[in-house]
Structure formats: structure tokens, C-alpha cells
Image (cartoon, rainbow, N blue to C red; front, side):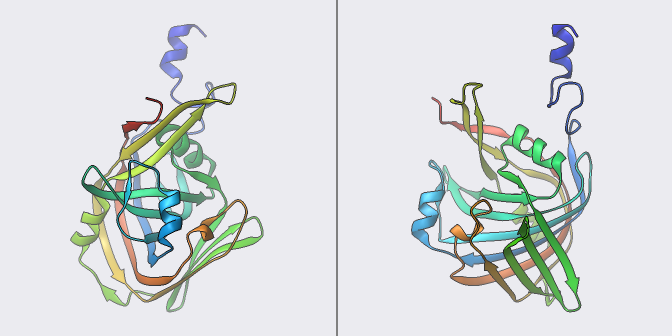
Length: 245
């Protein structure tokens, strides 16, 4: 393979058999279960990177079922996002992500810098309750229970929240192990259509684990929970701060 062919085909690894196809990446019937809770403000300050600013000691714990996504397939994800502010604009910092599919793990880390790890999140509907559980191996790391569709919400309010910017830290080392790329990346969700949205009472328990460390942001008080279904496109990112400068 000559150099021009390498440059043409080198959009993902491995070179001759990429782990994921080229985008755009569209998601149909993406189902969210999000519990918003109050946490320890000192811990939050230690974990959120500058120049992002913590607004309140709030964390959103998410379970997301993605049954139909172009390129990435059918998978489930679980993790934490933190409301932040950057240059006067409110958004969220993606702190942790655990999922059960290799393709979006590789693509998410390589393209945007998503903090994705392989684990086993599950969402089940058990009568009048939605149950979300995150296992890392055999160990239970998160347990969420939510009432099933108690109060309808305005789809437009959920759509507005999804349009807020999302922030990530993209890290790529040199071949000698030193830091080569360290960037604050911003991305947006686009082409959003919210199909239904509900609020319900919920409970969330997080458990200590050395690798899946969601319990580092402890649950002090559950504040609210939402359950909604949407179609959307995962937009490509832009670098808003280079830590290597």
C-alpha cells in the first residue's frame, strides 16, 4: 500500500480492518433513564478539569439503551455527566461511560475522547418499574430503580437540554508513553427529535469498585429523574482548549 492510499484509508484502527465505519453516526429510538443527584462538592471540584467550572454539586447518572445506531449497532451504556460552565456557556462534562460494545468504545475514544470502558450495563422493564444495573465483571457497581412513566414532560424541554454543549478530555500518548495529545473537546447532538418524555420517582445506589469507580461521586440526595426516547445524530467535535500549549 503506497503512502497516498494509507492517508486515504487511515480514518480508524486497524488500518486494513477498521473497528468502526465512517460517520455520521445516527441513533434511532435512543432510550434515556437519567437520575439527577446531589454529591460531595469537594470531590466534584477535584474531578472536573479546568477551565471548566462546576455550577452546583450535581451529577446526572445515565442509563442509555441504543437499539439502532448506524455503524455502532445495538448496545447499552451507563455513566455520569456533570453540569459545568465554559466561557459563560452552560453544558455538561462527560465523566464516565461504561458499555458493552467494542465498536463505539473504539470510535468514541479515538474520535472524540469519550471516557469509555467495557462493562455490562442492563436496563429492564419490570412491571411498573424500570431497573438499570451496571456490572463490571461479576460485581454490581450501580443500581437504579425508576417508576414507569409517572408524569408527562414537554418534549421541547428535553430537546433544549440535549442541545447543550458536551465536553470531554481527549488523551493520546506518544509511543514512548509520554503525553502527545491532551485537549478539551466540545461536541453537540444534532437532528434531535424527542418522541416521548416522562418524569418519575427514582432511587440510585453506587458501589465501590477499583476500576468502575462511579461511587467516587457519592449519592447524597436524589433530586429528580427523567425517562425519554429520542432520535439524534452524534455530531463531530471541536478542540476548545489545548492543555499542551
